[in-house]
Image (tube, rainbow, N blue to C red; front, side, top):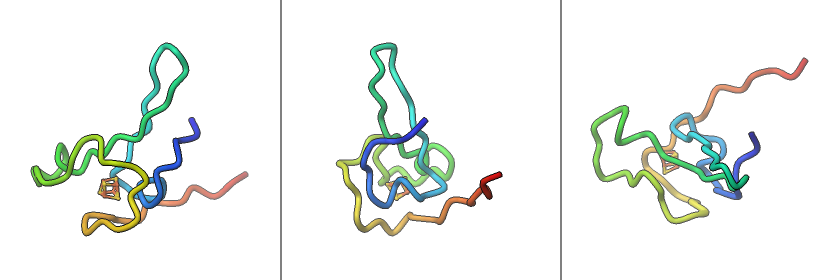
Length: 63
Ligand code: SF4
């Protein structure tokens, strides 16, 4: 599912893109949930251009 224009979050390992029944998509940050670092908001103000919690997502090669 293509994500919204979320800046750095779109290439971050902690992003999860979620959709609703009306077809809207949202960028969710799971860093707080996965690490316990509660300073990371579940729904940060987008786009995010700087984030100390950013970790590059693994890239899956296209076939
Ligand atoms: S850790 Fe930072 S860059 Fe990564 S998804 Fe969360 S807010 Fe976005």
